Each structure stands twice: as C-alpha cells, then as structure tokens.
Length: 399
Image (cartoon, rainbow, N blue to C red):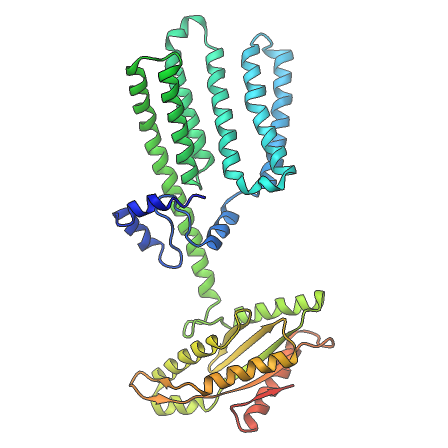
C-alpha cells in the first residue's frame, strides 16, 4: 500500500527524485511519490514514532464523541432547540463517525492496520456533514450564494484532510483528490449544471489544494529526515568507528539484556572474548595505519563467520567480544572454533600491498545459575582467553 511503483518510475530521473536521494542516502531511500521508506522495517519504525497508537486514538475519539453527543443534547433541549437541522447534522454527521471510529479501533484489533483508510473515511463523513450543516442553516435570502458556501465547505474539507494526515502525504493527496472528484460529479449531475461553475470551482479547489499539498510534503519530509538523523546518531553512538562493529557500550547493553532474559526465562547464552595474536608486532613493523587496516579487515572476516543472531563487538584496541544468544557449551565452542579457523585461513592485505597472516585467541564462558551478574561471565571468559594465549595462541579455551 502506498508504494505507487508506476508513479515512481515516472519521476525516477526527475530533479525531485535526485534531491530526495541526496537527502535520504542508502539504506534510507524513500519512494518519490509517497515519501514512504522503501525498507518496510524503517517505515514501521517511523509510523511507531510519529503516529498516535490506534488504541489510544480510539479511546480519545470515544471520549470526544461522548462529550460532543452530550453537548449536542444539551444544546437541543436548552439553547437552540429551534435549529433542528443544525443539530441533526452535528449529532449524526459528526458525533456518529467519531464514536464509530472509537469503537472500531478499540474493540476490533484487526482493523487497526487500516487506520489511515478509516481516518480518511471518517474525515470525509465529518467534512461533508459540516458542509450540509452550512446549507441547512442558511436563511432564505442567502440561497443565491449557497454555491459559494458549498465551495468554502469543500475547502474546509480539504484542510481537514491535509491537517489530519500531515505525516501521510499520499493519503492526504488521495483524500483531497476524492473531494475534488466529488465536486465535479456534483457540478455535472446535481443542481450546478453550469459549466462555468464546475470549471471555475475545480480551479478554485485545485488552487487551494496545491499549497496544502506542498505544506504536507515539506512537513512529512522534515519528519522523515528527523527520524533518519536520529537513527544515524543512535547508530554512531553504538558503533565502532574503525570496524563498523558494535562498540563496547552497545555490546554491554545487549549482554545485560541477555542476562535479564536468562534470569526470567532461563534462555542460555555464551560469551567469548577474542584477542588478535601478536598484534603489537603489526603496528611496530608496518605502522599504525597498517594496523588499523588489519583491524578493519579482521572485523569484516569475523563478521562473515558469525551467525546472524550473534553480536560481535570491538571492546577496545585489538580485543573483541562475541555474544552468542540461545547457545550452550558445545554449540558455542563449535562456533568459536569455526571463527578461529576462518581467521587463520585468511591473508590480510595491507595498504602497501603486503600480505600478512593473523590469528586470534578466544576464551569463552556460558552463563551459570550462580552468576551474580554479567561481570562473572566476562571474568571467566577473560581468564579463558589468557589461558588460550599462554598455551600457544590461535586456540579456544572454555572456562
């Protein structure tokens, strides 16, 4: 929904599309016509960040609808009982759609995925009811001007659409187009047969729609840009600059989460600490630039030999950490052996064209019931890593 692939092909080479590509670089590309993220996960994340929860929206609508209904009843009995048409449109044209929205989103969870469409229908009903209310409250001597009031009411409905969907430009544009199409049908087949009125009214509505569409587009653009910038800042704060792996902070946070899950559900996990063997010699012999290139290549090679569910992070210098979720001793050791062998088989290319061999020593530990926290798990893994180094390096030890 909302991808509009055909439209995107038409604008793919346009300056607008190129401008969007420069502001939403990969992997944050958006569809040019709808501004939706091409990555469904990103789109879901944006929706969660910038939309009201459907259940909250339903409860809010229920409160507003009940309050409006009570107010309309009081107005009918006490204040303006003579204006029955006015109250009828308020009660059944405004109150009923709001209450129906509330009950639908609250008690029918399956329709919450269609919140945009439901809101679009409700806004159309409310807007058309307000237009009808304007008609019914005009005095007899203002009937010649009711076509003007009709157009003003449609402009109000356009505004409702674009304000209601300011973070959904494609829904607002579609709903606004429906308003104009309805006007054309009314102008042709219901009381306003004059071609002049239909043509000039259409131009009037289109003129009103253009700035609304522009404002909605800019609003959604900046909202999505802010969302992407926030993701980038969060990624930078949790990523090692050199290797692109998780940094110490991100690794420790994930480790703490795994330990909390273990305490609650008993889900096992294993931790391995890895250290590049004789890495100081690489820096001393080839220089720190070559050492950085070697660390970067080492991180890439190790990532290729890790499972998707594992987390590999750089803890500092040439020391790395590997968190293996839902993994016990034998499987964890096999994973570490596979990682060690994968590094040992590689040749690492330095900036000056030379090739070197590198190995790693690994110490691993599996969480235990008597561990008082993650520090105990890390301490055992650290002890095992130093045992691997002292026993000849390029091997795996388990504590």
